[in-house]
Length: 115
Image (cartoon, rainbow, N blue to C red; front, side, top):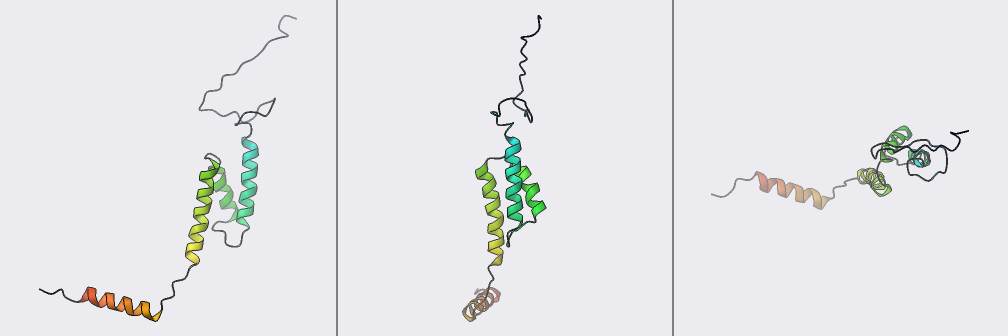
């Protein structure tokens, strides 16, 4: 048999990803499926939190997009969303001194300036 020891070499361009390959699981593109599964499980957990800013399906769509960036930047986005919810939970309770200050500032801004 003349063709028994043939080898095939595939040169994949840098702008393409290998999503499935047979052989050792070494390349980052082949590990993409594990990253996607872990991201979706994290989205499921985030969607079940009591004060979650997004629903589970919204988290899943977001983390699918965030698989394209590094983990640090993805955590910044998630932290930012939770910060917005936390910030919105703080209620502004004006005290008597605050309302006096607001009234004083309003009266000063409405008064005519001296000539």
